[in-house]
Length: 406
Image (cartoon, rainbow, N blue to C red):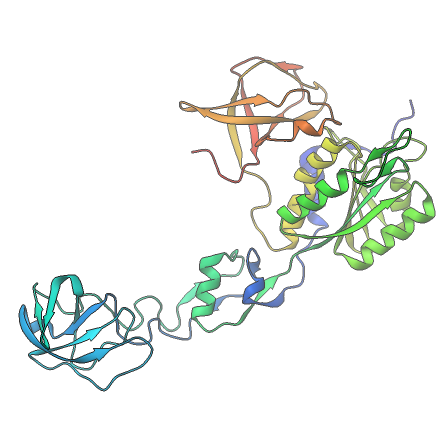
């Protein structure tokens, strides 16, 4: 069989090349409602004290602490959202709600459960310390305090904090726009009837879902036939509309595998083979300064290659620092056969058994068996050298799950 002209790269070397050519996107200012999951590109310093006034931390009565327990005259009430003209003097109290400004003269709040009110009088039933149940000015944030740092990922708490400080928008790294293209004369849309030799396109939809999961915005380029002119037009379309292009199919050594030569003519191919299984023919190029990932056509090869190379690139482009999945050490539940010549990424389900994390594979690891990815929460990272690993052997696993196993 003819040998590929592309050198076989180690997995780690290939990833380093990818990250070298996948720079962060230019930050943009987005409104609060569009910030979830984005990475902050600026430092946020508080220009206000929070709270801006001494405020009640409980529903109850504003009092003078030195008065102590006993019956007091109810002088009025202070509700949230405005400042009343009532004040607390010795022998009097003011009814107050949570978050309301502390009225003049008061230095503490007694919660309603420790009082009783009758006929315009209020009994304070407990000893009171100054500032009890009072949130002083700047208790949460002081003027000049750094509250968020560049590189911080924005979630509900961070966005709420921005809003509380009066920010309507923030400077963040945008979501990468990712054009996704499937290639192959044999591919049909999921709802289309199949003719002889035809299959339905699954890669495009799984890859677009993977892009979304990685924080990107997928652009659907459909299916391109194995025709040089059509492929070239779709690649050009994708790169005009997106920050990066992801294709599947057309990167092996067959007569209709046209993507490698097309990418070589239009840009720079940085590698065309990786010493891994599945996903060996993975190709990475840059065209017009934009990263292009040409993934293998087998569904599992495509998804594993995305996980190992495309996902870290997309995370880096959007300013993330945590580019790779966490690694855990697992014990194998059974004998595992694997390729002795290549790093193999075996789909597995990891469960905690006592003090150990125990991994069982998802069955047949065929590159075309998409079912092997369903339910998998880890990829076993098995090194070349031995062709099998016995039950109980220790292995490294990339953790794919949303919740880490404690």
